[in-house]
Length: 590
Image 1: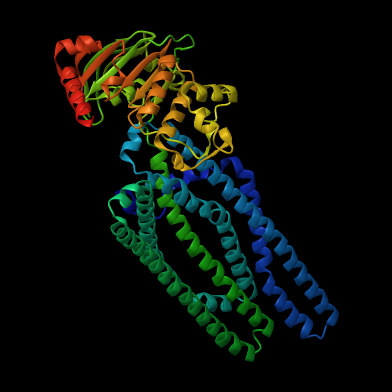
Image 2: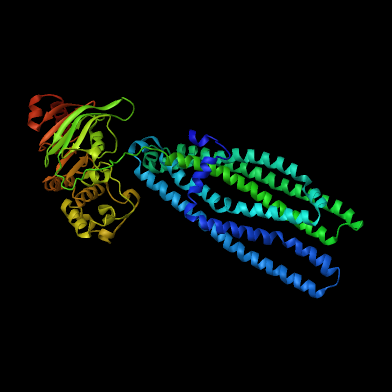
């Protein structure tokens, strides 16, 4: 949470210029909003002047007709102001919603393009805070800040013009309390800024905690950690509550203080103007108008203080948002990519070195070749680097040394989307999206018709349980497929891979989470699927890879052995020991 705790500047011109960039597509709407704000402010500021005319001219001279005209003009001004205020409010909110829509879409698009290395180091809850809470803060600035601040400024300017044009001495008396207001506003801004920072810190911590513990709820319940998790959340929630209460406290002090200062100004007006009125130097209408002007004057002052808080919270939020948008953890596409339109499926690793961090090598000088249509299996202890090979082939990470080629073309010379179009990966931990079954097989790809979805499901045998459901392929899938068994989800992932008809198929422990009967069903489908495709199979169960064209044994990031099942057994090395260990485990199990 370190970046949440950085206070930053109250106003940053560079950040503001970047924020204003999002208003550029709507600049004429912004101009219209400013014009409407000027009209509304002018109509608001002129109201007390009608009071002066009514009292000093119409009532004093018993001019009933003039009083009626003044009242009708006053009503017309109020009506026109109400209409203008409606259009102005609607327009400013529309501008705010459009700009945050654009910004949120840019953020989501950027998140989709970031490499997996970025997600390895950033908590999901923090990213959710960026796209939700931080963007919503900017909505307040775009809708209530940038345009509406002109309304407050024009209102104050209009009020001051009328006050000084009517009686400049009385105007100075009314404004004599401003130094106290400015000092109180300075203290309020400082304290409120710190309180808002605490609120943002706590909400980010709550989001991160909630995401982590809801995702890992099964672990909390299995190990009876509900009470401990509850106590931790209670502490975070209490800290968020206290931070909000502190911010409310400063508002509860500031606004009454402004009202007291305004009341002092009213007292000064009555004292000074009353004395001048007795001398015949100030009219009753002028006094009444000044009292109304005084009441109106403090409202935009309070609003400007609120808008200052909106601005400084927007500065903090925009700093974090732009830090995310400026993150360059994006794998570059070549300027002139080589097409893979006639891909056959040959894969080659040449002296590949890779480390997730610095030079803590996960793969060391790895070289192997998979001919088109071959099936290669990788085995080895956990952490040997087997899954990393898949990630590098799909270009989720950049290698530090060596080359990776498909059909003798360096994958760095290929468009990433084009490369991944020809690769399908079936993982041990299957991820299903909320929606329906057919959507989770096709993943919303319009190029995959329903007939291919159904054929893929039949191919792996998953149609047997789909057709027992009330809505079959339209059956709803809950978040992460929570209503389906592990085996059913695994079969759906196979159907998904089949529907995309890849040239390279990757199976990463794809059968380790299913029962023996389901595994036999999958193995039968795999034999058909592997025909004509290059395949990479990672498995702990050595019985599932005995028919592979080649088995590569990984150990501590290096290739230690390579050959067929029989050749590796005859070698009597690491593979032989792994096989003997599993064979003994099976005997014990039996």
